[in-house]
Image 1 (cartoon, one colour):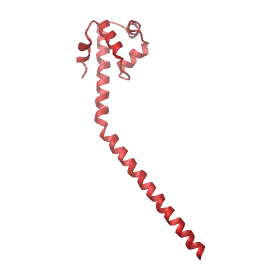
Image 2 (tube, one colour; image 1 turned 30 degrees about the vertical axis):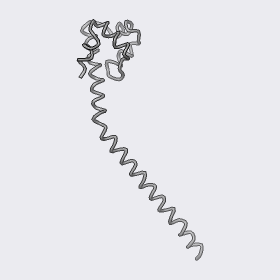
Image 3 (cartoon, helix red, strand yellow; image 1 turned 90 degrees about the horizontal axis):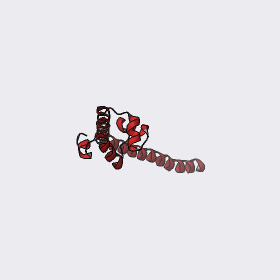
Length: 116
């Protein structure tokens, strides 16, 4: 009888500790999910800006009848980098942005003012 009572006294707190831990993890998960959901506006805005910059770069490249390979050689990057810029996967560095503007015959301000 004493061992059964002793085992109950040991397992009962462990049970409550386990349940408490699970509830705590659930609360943390809910907080993280709420924060992620509320940040969706800024993530969408960032994606639009990147996509718009890529569209502007592609428009200038096609308007000047240049290939991605030609632009890449003129700027000093790989063709894949130019492709990523146009797809909005990555953005050109500041020095590459200046080189692109010079290549397209426009100012950097003019290039960026078309970006939404």
